[in-house]
Length: 479
Image (cartoon, rainbow, N blue to C red):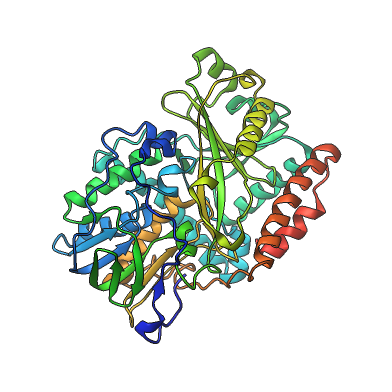
């Protein structure tokens, strides 16, 4: 995140020499299933042709930047807004995620209440639930066909330890009015018939989406409203009042940093966000008789209560999309295109999918992909605007950014306009997360935590008791 004060332009944010270069001549459809199946061209828009003066400059054409532009232009079509991206709109997590538009937030309600008070936690989670429906409203109003199905989320418990966590989550939901209900084994299997299911939870506050269709459609909508998007235009420096690129400088009254998992590519910001890779696979379209056995009749998104996160959805064309963490954190917060594809992790995902659903043991896998997501040291996403220097930011969604970025965009728009209302008073506004440790402690800690979670899941499956290892790791992580 941005510092509270930048004392002079000499303290600007500069891009490191090892910044990820734009893909030269590569077919962007190779990025993911979502990019491969999005309609229309993925050819880059023209880059910044030279110096430019605008009212607002946004660095990052993902959901955060585009939602911010959308709401500001909806309020004032005369506003001059330019969005810069090193690649194309929706290149990063916005176009490659698991397709969950959910009310999930990386900071749990109890943790947020301990930090900010119960009323603030309830208000924030209400705003997250509202954001799910706001995304759907905008998609409908702007005629963005993103294969949306408001089917909710089912999270399975597949051993006694996981069932204990399901019960605890349902109890927390009751305290904070989150709408999550506990499922019996039969009720859980009715929604999703995975092996060894002993229970689970269900929340209605999630929609399955095609993320690339949504983000690309939103980019086109921003352009229709008068915004300008310059692609293949990586920022080489972000300063109060300007964004510098190799082909020109954009001067602006306000600059918004919306770089999420790519934040560590900016000099001085490697310790603000940790880029953690999440990888995914997609099957070929499955026949109706297979889905009759598996379930997901309403296209519920799904997961289970293991510690090492997994997630999935049934796509509109009847594929099973399945993803999880598992990939290592890379020393120095490095980001490389080669990190998007780890054969070992893809093999683990395919094997795990077969264990969950024996019918899918030998299913054809048509797509494999991944990418970085951003995690703040205290696992709390934040949004803010320092009016004194004209710099705004949002991010740290920990992979749950589709609805959260909409809330961030609406909030940034109101902060920039100078509004004071329920959104600008939410507890994540102006929140400052501590920095991650320096290397090598960051690398050692992140990868030790990954291995500990894998071990904790294995022990819980064997013994059926909640793992003390997992509890210790989550305590250290501040979750």
